[in-house]
Amino acid sequence: MQLSKGHHSFEGRHRTKDGRVIPVDINSSMIQFEDQLAVLSVIRDITERRALEETRRQLDLARLRNAEEIEAKNRALTQSEARYRQLTEGCLDAVVVADSTGVITLFNPSAERTFGYEAEEVVGQPLTVLMPENFRQLHCAGFSRYLTTREPRVVGRTVELRGLRKSGEEFPLELSLNAVDVAGQIQFIGSIRDQTERQRMRAMLMQTEKLASIGLLSAGVAHEINNPLAYVGNNLAVLERDLKGIMDMLVNYESARDQLASIAPEVVERVQAVCDELDWPYVRDNLDRTLARTRDGVQRVANIVQNLRGFARTSPPRMEDASLSDLLASALEIVNGRLRSAKIEVKLDCRSVPKISCVPSQINQVILNLLVNAIQAIESQNRREDGLIRISLRKQDADLVLELDDNGCGIEPECLPLLFDPFFTTKSVGEGTGLGLSISHGIITGHGGRIEVESKPGQGSRFRVVLPLKK
Image (cartoon, rainbow, N blue to C red; front, top):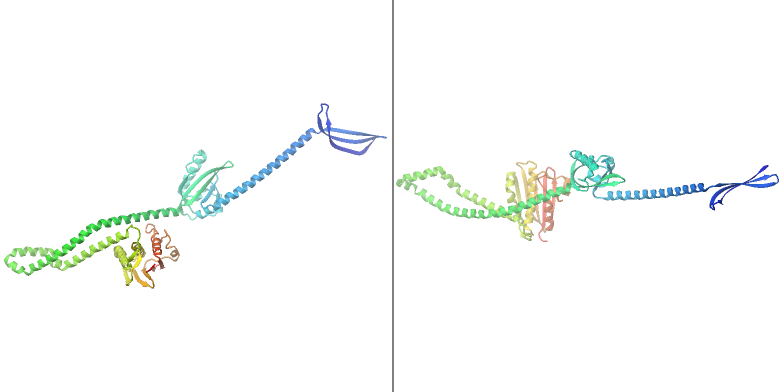
């Protein structure tokens, strides 16, 4: 018996006895018996194999779909993270994100500017690196309590706290804190605003309101003083008139004293005893001078009261012709006491100049502010004998020029460009609001003029106010 080399394998279908059609695998071989050929076929039921292959194919399709879905989700997540990062980086508020362990995971550019750190310096660090020492223990306790109880005390609210910059400087901040669940993990998102400038402005506005209240109070006090002051002035005039008569009477007595002594010596003795006790020769020689000084003092008080009433006047500003020399004299009258106590000499060079159209109370405010600044600059140098303010007033072309020089502390060059900015001041805390020069600049420019400054540290400053004669 010889086997042929022919062999065939193929799939087909077979009907079973119960009528079902099933897939089969047929392997056929040709066999030669001497002079006859025969075909040998082996049929295998491959139903289970087909089912297994179909299951495998379905699994492969499912895996492919899952892979595509995962890739799409990863792509969407990447895009979402990119958008989120762009939004946080473009946010003007400082945004700091921390995980459930309190470790910083995101630190946007605004946070870098606020705290002074680069993002890579703090990402991975605990949140406490951004807090003053005395806040850290309280933060840790509150953080732990929230994770345990989920009871919000700071979360979901906006609170004012203190922050710590990289330089070690503490500063006030406003924190809006929220907690979100990301893939089963709590993430804390803080939106932070630096409150340094806001608190400074708040303090300055409070100071301004206080000064406004003092101004209104001074106007009321000036009004209350003005009435009794009028009585004092009138009574002083009456006293001067009556004392003149009394002095004439005493002169007549002295001329007849010798004759009176021969008639009534005891009367002359009593009068002489009074004269001795009174030191009549001194009183007689100084009475006119004392009355003149009293009259000048009353007039000076009246002038101060009048100036205070004008300075504190709250009526709408009205342009009128005014003498800059008179306004300067009024401002000097108000600060005269401080000039004397600081032993500061004032040298005036005020030439005859025409009147100018202005709001007198506003120009008075500017002059007074410049005088006060000059006095403070001199006092800061502890000049007790050689403090000097030079004031000149002149006409220059179509302008009036008021210059005020002092030999005070001067101003640093880097401060000069900021000098007229609101709330900028070179004075110590509590000594200045940073509004005086800004307001003065606004008043002068509102009158069509300009205000200039020259200064050398340690040598003094010169302020120049230029006002047009005609607008």
